Amino acid sequence: MPGQDDIIARIERFKESRGGGVVVEGRKGGYTLLLEETGAPIARLKPVDQGGRMRVLYWSYRERWDEVGPFGGIILPLDKALEFVAREPLFWNWA
Image (cartoon, rainbow, N blue to C red; front, side, top):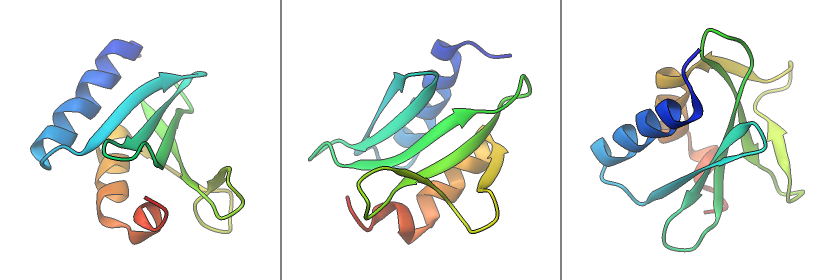
Protein backbone atom coordinates (compact mmCIF):
# COMPACT_ATOMS: atom_id res chain seq x y z
CA MET A 1 0.00 0.00 0.00
CA PRO A 2 1.35 3.43 -0.85
CA GLY A 3 2.29 5.61 2.12
CA GLN A 4 0.53 8.85 2.98
CA ASP A 5 3.33 10.94 1.45
CA ASP A 6 3.04 8.99 -1.83
CA ILE A 7 -0.71 9.54 -2.02
CA ILE A 8 -0.40 13.25 -1.22
CA ALA A 9 2.27 13.53 -3.94
CA ARG A 10 -0.06 11.84 -6.47
CA ILE A 11 -2.89 14.20 -5.54
CA GLU A 12 -0.52 17.18 -5.81
CA ARG A 13 0.59 16.07 -9.31
CA PHE A 14 -3.03 15.69 -10.38
CA LYS A 15 -4.06 19.12 -9.12
CA GLU A 16 -1.05 20.77 -10.77
CA SER A 17 -1.94 19.11 -14.07
CA ARG A 18 -5.38 20.74 -13.70
CA GLY A 19 -4.03 24.20 -12.95
CA GLY A 20 -3.89 24.09 -9.15
CA GLY A 21 -6.29 25.96 -6.88
CA VAL A 22 -6.72 23.04 -4.47
CA VAL A 23 -4.91 22.23 -1.23
CA VAL A 24 -4.64 18.66 0.05
CA GLU A 25 -4.21 17.73 3.71
CA GLY A 26 -3.72 14.31 5.23
CA ARG A 27 -6.13 14.11 8.17
CA LYS A 28 -7.50 11.32 10.36
CA GLY A 29 -6.59 8.50 8.02
CA GLY A 30 -7.82 10.24 4.87
CA TYR A 31 -7.21 13.14 2.53
CA THR A 32 -9.14 16.39 2.52
CA LEU A 33 -9.21 18.59 -0.58
CA LEU A 34 -9.85 22.28 0.07
CA LEU A 35 -10.26 25.25 -2.24
CA GLU A 36 -6.95 27.11 -1.99
CA GLU A 37 -8.49 30.58 -2.22
CA THR A 38 -11.06 30.23 0.58
CA GLY A 39 -10.33 26.99 2.43
CA ALA A 40 -13.81 25.70 1.53
CA PRO A 41 -14.09 21.89 1.64
CA ILE A 42 -14.29 20.14 -1.74
CA ALA A 43 -13.87 16.41 -1.19
CA ARG A 44 -12.63 13.80 1.25
CA LEU A 45 -10.87 10.62 0.12
CA LYS A 46 -10.64 7.76 2.62
CA PRO A 47 -8.62 4.61 1.89
CA VAL A 48 -10.76 1.47 2.06
CA ASP A 49 -8.20 -1.27 1.37
CA GLN A 50 -4.56 -2.07 0.75
CA GLY A 51 -5.07 -1.70 -3.01
CA GLY A 52 -5.30 2.09 -2.94
CA ARG A 53 -9.04 2.39 -3.49
CA MET A 54 -10.71 5.45 -1.95
CA ARG A 55 -14.17 6.16 -0.61
CA VAL A 56 -15.22 9.52 -2.09
CA LEU A 57 -17.13 11.91 0.19
CA TYR A 58 -18.50 15.40 -0.41
CA TRP A 59 -19.20 18.35 1.90
CA SER A 60 -22.97 18.35 2.27
CA TYR A 61 -25.48 21.04 3.07
CA ARG A 62 -25.54 19.52 6.58
CA GLU A 63 -21.98 20.80 6.97
CA ARG A 64 -20.42 17.36 7.23
CA TRP A 65 -18.83 14.77 4.95
CA ASP A 66 -21.44 12.57 3.25
CA GLU A 67 -21.44 9.61 0.91
CA VAL A 68 -21.84 10.28 -2.79
CA GLY A 69 -24.89 8.44 -4.10
CA PRO A 70 -27.75 6.69 -2.36
CA PHE A 71 -26.36 3.14 -2.18
CA GLY A 72 -23.36 3.23 0.14
CA GLY A 73 -21.20 5.70 -1.67
CA ILE A 74 -18.57 5.49 -4.35
CA ILE A 75 -15.25 3.67 -4.06
CA LEU A 76 -12.66 4.17 -6.80
CA PRO A 77 -8.91 3.85 -7.36
CA LEU A 78 -7.18 7.13 -6.48
CA ASP A 79 -6.71 8.36 -10.07
CA LYS A 80 -10.33 7.68 -10.97
CA ALA A 81 -11.51 9.26 -7.70
CA LEU A 82 -9.60 12.45 -8.54
CA GLU A 83 -11.05 12.53 -12.07
CA PHE A 84 -14.54 12.03 -10.59
CA VAL A 85 -14.09 14.93 -8.15
CA ALA A 86 -12.69 17.18 -10.90
CA ARG A 87 -15.66 16.69 -13.24
CA GLU A 88 -18.66 16.45 -10.86
CA PRO A 89 -20.40 19.73 -9.97
CA LEU A 90 -21.51 18.27 -6.62
CA PHE A 91 -18.04 18.87 -5.19
CA TRP A 92 -17.89 22.46 -6.31
CA ASN A 93 -21.34 23.70 -5.21
CA TRP A 94 -20.15 24.86 -1.79
CA ALA A 95 -16.63 25.90 -2.78
